Image (cartoon, rainbow, N blue to C red; front, side):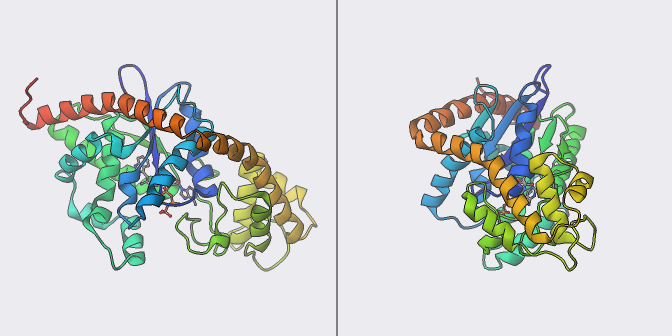
Length: 333
Ligand code: ATP
Ligand code: LTN
C-alpha cells in the first residue's frame, strides 16, 4: 500500500523472445489492475544477467519488452512501466535483504536447481541470490499483489517470508505481498513435451509459440504439437498434450473446457489443432500490430524509460530511506 492505494507489481526478463506462456501467465493479466491499483511493471534486465547475455541482444530485447508491455494494453499514463537497472534502489535493497535471507532458503528454490543444472558452467552467486533481488523489486513498492505464472509462486512466498522476518525486527517496514496466479494461464506447457513448461529459453523453437510469431508459423507449430494416443478432444491427466492445447484454446477464446469438448466431439486432433492455431493467431494479431508501431518509435520508448524510471524512483527512494534509517545507516539531508 502506498497511502490509500493498493499496489500491483510484476516483472518480465528481457532474456529471450516472449512466449504465449509469458502472455497468458503474466502480461495479459497485468492490465486488470490498472484501474484500481497503483501499478508498476518492470523490465528486469538485472535479473537477466544471471545467465550470460549478448549485450546488443539484451539491449534490443529491453526495448522490445517495453514495447510489448504497451502492446498488451498497459497504458503508460495509467501504469508505471520502467527498466530495472535505471532505478538504483533495487540493487541497494537487494544487498540489505541478502543479510535477512538464509542460505538454506535459497538452496530450496526450484528455479535455482533447474537453472544451475542447465548452466552447469556458470553457477554464479547472482543465480543463487536472484530471489532476493526479486523480493527487493516487490518490497520497494510496498506491493500488495504480484501477478505471475505458477513457477514464480515459490519466489513470491520467499519474498513474504523475508518481509515478515524484517517486519518482526523492524515493525511496519514492508507490505507483505500476495502472489496472484490466474487459474487458466498459470502454466502453459511446451508443444514438444507437454510435461515441461513452455519457456522462452527453450532451444527447440517448435516447442514454443512466440507472441510475435507470424500466422503461418503459429499454425504450423500447433499442427506439429505432440499429442497423446487416442483421438478424443478431452482434458485428462493422461492426455497432457491435448489438455494443454485445450487450455490454450480456452484462454484465447474464453470457452470452458466442457464447451470445447462439445465443440470438437467426433472431430480428429488435426482439425482441433488447426482451430487452436487460428484462435491464437487471431488473438495475437492486434498485439503484434501495436507492438510494431511502438517499437518503431524508439524516441517514444526512451522517453517512457526515462519517465518510468523517475516515477518508480520516487517510490523506491521512500522505501529505501525508511529501511536504511531503521537499520541505523546515517542519514544526512
Ligand atoms: P526463462 O525461460 O528465461 O526462464 P520464462 O519464459 O520462464 O523465462 P520469465 O521472464 O521468467 O519467463 O517470466 C515472466 C513471467 O511469465 C512470469 O510471471 C512467469 O511466471 C510467466 N511464465 C513464464 N512461462 C510461463 C508459462 N509457460 N506459463 C505461464 N506463465 C509463464
Ligand atoms: N523472477 C521472475 C521475474 C521477476 C519478477 C519480479 C516477477 C523479477 N522481479 C518481481 C514478479 C515480481 C521470473 O523469472 N519470471
